[in-house]
Image 1 (cartoon, rainbow, N blue to C red):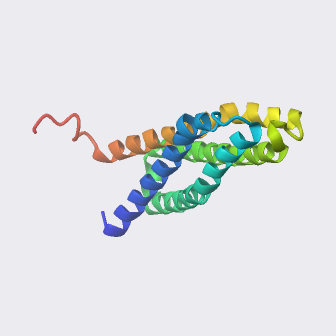
Image 2 (image 1 turned 90 degrees about the vertical axis):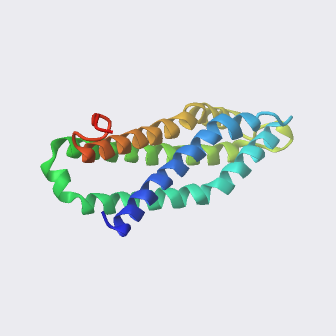
Length: 173
């Protein structure tokens, strides 16, 4: 394995970890903390500010994750074609990645809608739109960490496939 290959693989894993960790922190920490202010507008501003600051980092992580994923598949094209378990894992990772991108994008869109529907003084400009966005965000906040966490599990599985029979089953240590 070359230094370049190691760097690409490490970047792929680190960017997925950033995507996973940021979305999980939002669901577990930022979003519940944003419920503490007194008015609806303040709650939306707290959450919105946190996500606006994280957004460029997450966007960069997602872009790099996608690029390094393509590089890894290109580097391992023979293994992907010749080894059915690897091909199945790559198809699963591709589907999960697409779902995670869609989930992240949907959360962004509904967050923007919530922000636009929120008014001054704690009274939403469009209460129905605000409630629709809030309901969607309530479950979307958990889909991205679930999907990106699943990608981390598949990466672990792919790493184990490369080890062959040695490794955890090797009792010679």
